[in-house]
Length: 180
Image 1 (spheres, rainbow, N blue to C red):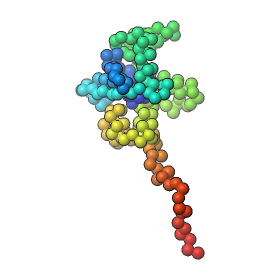
Image 2 (cartoon, one colour):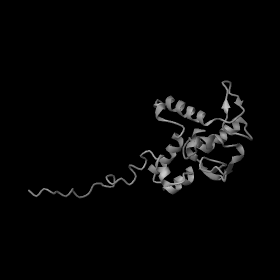
Image 3 (cartoon, rainbow, N blue to C red):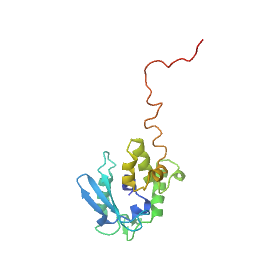
Image 4 (cartoon, one colour):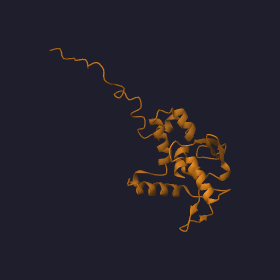
């Protein structure tokens, strides 16, 4: 769930709203059809491509493993699991996504108070910006309506991209302005 939430740049409601029928397998990865979102109340929908990952943390592989192990063939993809490992019918809530994020963050020794349900979406936007991805391509993935809204999610990710001081390297000595 977390890998796909990050890779898709999904809102919590979009992530928990994914049904099995919303996932299309393609050669490059998967395409997730988001039927409705906060900025799409009419339900026009949008398609989000999630490519195969380049590391062992591939969101496509993780999702396929979950679907195979869970036996989910229709309905909500992300469901609760009881303490005996059995699926519980029904869709997860957005609040549960936030709780899972906080629990996983705490498990690796970070302060869970610094993270929320928006952390997956903000994390993708920030990481993509830091890697030099254009704001247009980031917005295509996240569904943000404008660069201004996207900028609220990027956590200093562009601070070091094309940084003026970082572009300076070894070269001629600085010009001295000392006239004495």
